Amino acid sequence: MAAATLISIDRHSELLRSVGFEIEGIDDETDAWGAILAERLCMYQKLRSETETAGTPSGHDDFYKSYVLFVGLVQKKLMGGSRFTALKST
Image 1: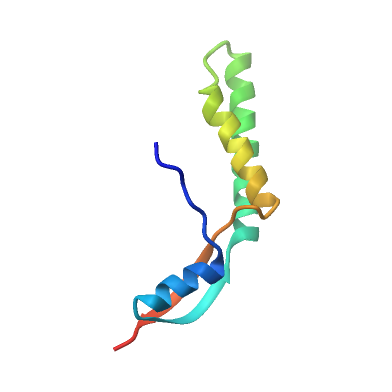
Image 2: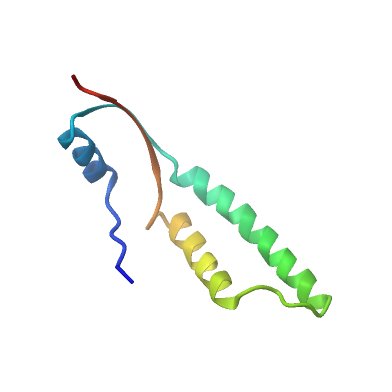
């Protein structure tokens, strides 16, 4: 499996400009993602608890552990996301 490479907002902007885009706006969505992911994690934890109480499989542990890690990385701002508005220069 190939290793993923994360790039910064500035590097992403450079890459867009290098192929002819003019950046009109950049919105850092990391805080919003952190809140949404935290809500989803609470939902998943509740569902896992309910299924365990019912004696049914509670889901794949590796997925759960990975999701908890992902949420933590976003909330610590070690990972995140941005929305770019850009126009192709003519």
